[in-house]
Length: 114
Picture (cartoon, one colour):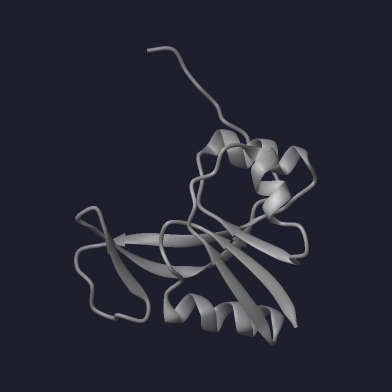
């Protein structure tokens, strides 16, 4: 059984749980909605888990990757309204549909002057 740590203020959607089961087989998901202090905090919380799904600032995710962790990212598409409660969610007045999971293997931010 794969042990998955879910680091987000939002619980997983039913479609997200099903997708994790499809990807990894039998899974045990632990939801941790406490605020993240740092990348070190994430790495400590991950102890004993096989995978981590993370919703965090890019600065924390970037540092987590530097520690050798390759977290999972829930790919969400902006939609007009919630139509499928298993796949769609509303956050802060905006609606999103779950598309699938991706593994974050690196980050690159490019900036330009204004």
